[in-house]
Image (cartoon, rainbow, N blue to C red; front, side, top):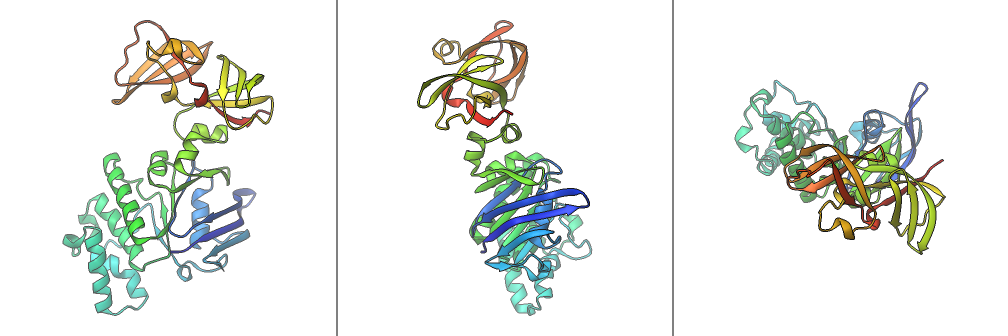
Amino acid sequence: MANIVLSDVTKTFGKFTAVDKVSAEIKDGEFVTLLGPSGCGKTTLLNLISGFLMPDGGRIAIDDKDVSAVLPEKRDTAMCFQSYALFPHLSVYENLAFGLKQLKWDRTRIAKRIDELSAQLDLTANLKKLPNQLSGGQQQRVALGRALAIRPGVILFDEPLSNLDAKLRESVRFEIRKIQTEAKLTAIYVTHDQTEALSMSDRIFVMNAGHVEQSGSPLDIYNAPATRFVADFIGAANILEGEVTAQIDSQTWTFKTEVGDLQVVSQIEPAAKNHYLCWRPEDAIVSADEVPKAENALVGSVSETAFQGAFTDIFVSVNGLPQRLQSQGAFIPSSNDINFGIPAEKIRILEARK
């Protein structure tokens, strides 16, 4: 295992700043995901940690050793690439053994390590095959095994599941997490897929425009987004502009919004009069029995519904503003208008409006 400390790490390409003074600490054995849209700097930051790029400023330390200018092969890291990067002319066994041969392990020691790995990754029956004779999931396991073979302190993943179909992607991501946990590896995982990030991570670093917008556990990131960007990028969110018009008690405020006055219960006191607010579609109460008793009761005009299996998305307009609700199971509107409520404690206060 290994811990990683980033201190004001910066990388520019000409006039473009890809990574902008990022500081963070990743603990021994932790699984951290760098999450964000294309161009946010997540892959650049991963390449800086791996040594494939050198920073223009700041410091990268692995186990208290400054590796900012150290070549990739001299760092205690291994990379799993998006394209697998397997040697097509080498067998599975030879692919797995490649890094060990570079370290000049003897044949007996290599064979023992490959036996362990192939059993762990369910590849024993495929050791003599070439990569093009394997399925996508099997190729991914070979790429993972090759990285694990040298027992690195840090394993780095660059969107490793993007080439797999949805069902296989789900099974392989749990496999990766299981292996990482069992091997007690420090892992950094790059993705733009929020489902991967939420299901696999100990912590998520949400990146935007070269900096970390917010970091925290999946629950913290989802349930307590700090900014509009995080709320909108992680899951679905209805985002409103709100103005504080009254304080009811130490944790309850009334906000004037485009959909009407809303009561908000929050342990975080508004830092200004004007803020952005958000609420999740699944937080809406649409049951006919419960809406009359709900806080923040509203009426929306239904524009569309979309059955998703376990729930139905309901798209409505409230005072001309599009909003999204969710109802458990199948939902068939009885009329064009729908009554719904938003519990006051489910509305999050985001950053102040400028």
